[in-house]
Length: 113
Length: 111
Image 1 (spheres, rainbow over the protein chains, first blue to last red):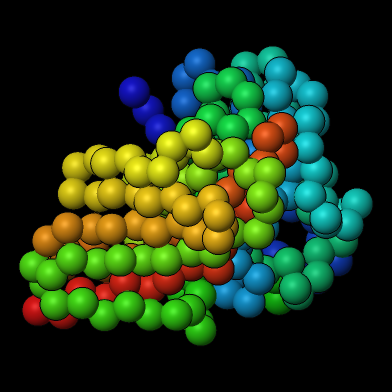
Image 2 (image 1 turned 135 degrees about the horizontal axis):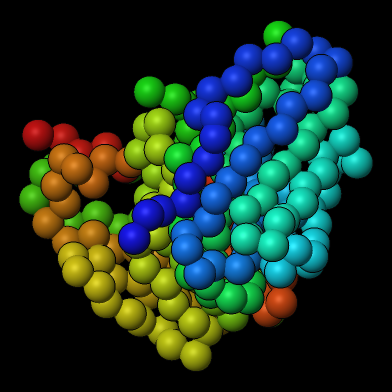
């Protein structure tokens, strides 16, 4: 069975631009969570979607947003990019609710210059 | 490969020895815990999980121990191999909330 797929793998953007990242969960999984990973802050939770509804949100500014489609695929968007947004963005999918085993994708490496 | 963390605590073990990686968690309401392994350039990979009603769980070459009294979690890897070299994260999940990850420990396996 295919794993979690994130596209693109690498991105370079300029300050002030916006970016959209995509995540396709494991087939049958309905929960998708997004995380930001940086050397200084580690892995930090951004938000979680379940059946097209945002169920939980981490402590990130409103420039970070996301959505989930009816096929469970999810996108996250970052507007007005800042240098500090450079990070590895990871997506994880779970079969059902929070508190069950989550499988991660390879991540999207975003560099803001 | 990409650097997961520049200043992570590092554990160095000889190939064939057992490794013990420790994690202190913060929320006494956490009722589910997972250990993940992250190799350079890859996303975290599930290793083993444990619920709060257990104090020990074994997998293939790995054992997780949970001590709720002191809010401590450990991962034991038997007969450590070069392929075990990676950064290991513990994650705690309070009921109804999302994952909170620890800072990670870099495991380095020496030949």
